[in-house]
Amino acid sequence: MSTEHGFVEPVSKVKSKMGIQQVLLHLDKETEALLEYLCQQSGKLYNCGIYFARQIFFKTGKLLTGKFDLDFEPTVSKTLLAQSMPSTPMQQTLRSVSEAFKSYKSLRDLFFKGQLHFKPKPPNYLKGSKLFKVAYPNSGGQKPKLIDGKLRFSLGLTVKRWFGVKEFFLPMPTNINFCKVKEFTILPKNGAFYLELSYEVEAVIAELDFSQALSIDLGTADNLAACVDTNGNSLLVDARAMKAMNQLWNKKVATRKANKSENYWDKWLDKVTRKRNHQMRDGINKAAKIIINHCLKYGIGNLVIGWNEGFKSNANMGRLNNQKFVQMPLGKLKDRLKQLCELHGIKFQETEEAYTSKASYLDGDSLPEFGKKPDGWKAVP
Image (cartoon, rainbow, N blue to C red; front, side, top):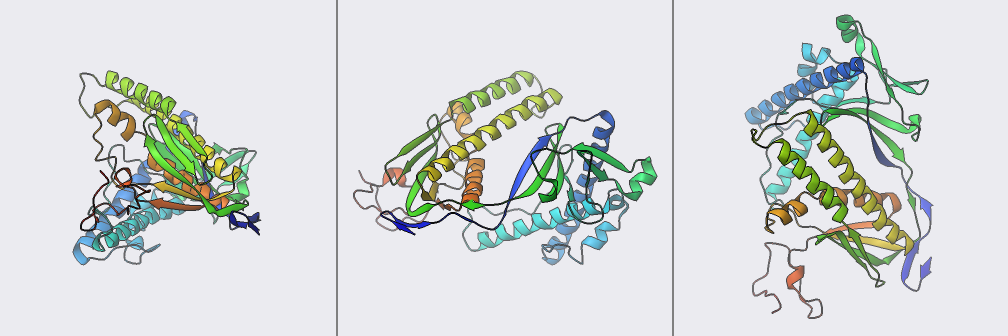
């Protein structure tokens, strides 16, 4: 199909995408103790796996990046520590170690090619509470079961023999089909536990004109995003409410930690931080939805976002403005926009914009990447 603006793709269904939903758990003391035990054992196992993988890398130069490396998984899984968890979550924890080293290998390759501005470090051990996630895939012998609207999780034979408990139950969200969930993950965050559900979402492509584009400038003044499309429409996403919430959180933390050590933390700080994180995530999700809805309303097929690696770390706008800008989760907004673009068939493009404020489009100035200015390049006076 074609229009006066260019080629338009019709509405059609495409391959399923993965969606994620997190639910804050309100637990009784017994269930909370069980989850804390599992996350502690998972954290110890993760650190054990990290130790083996680091030693192999330091001594042989080999990176364990496979799903289950033959030199690694049996050695760790035979330990008493690994047996203190159900076998399926144990394997998922060890897989997280492999995934961490796989990411490190990718960053390392980019660094050696000169495409990364910093030298990556090998994955390190968990610090602080040392609690780590516990994942149950919705397949296999130990997969969760849905019983009377609640999820039943198995604790395995070893835990049953040690503590006399063989299972625990968590609520199942009513807005998700149990059969479409691929994995259930128990996440310890900010002194609380969350249930994360990874599930299939059927993507639908709307009618889009791929000759049109929406450009986004993130973190401008009191706006989360400033958007302009090729049809001449503009859109501002206000960030003042989010910045006010973030500023209030900073004041509460500073007041609570007054006359205490820099590393001081308590349950009350966990609680206010958890609330602040929920507010930030809610604001980011709503902002991303507003931008994507604009693209769908006008049939815009391309979304271009300006992004400079490390631009927050080099921010120098004064203490208060730095606080407002640096603590805004702009990276999460970019990631959320990318996810929604994939879901709706919009082409997502990330572009470097180090010299956009110094170049003139009307004068035909080129826009080199940061650190790659050609000889003789000058900004327009």
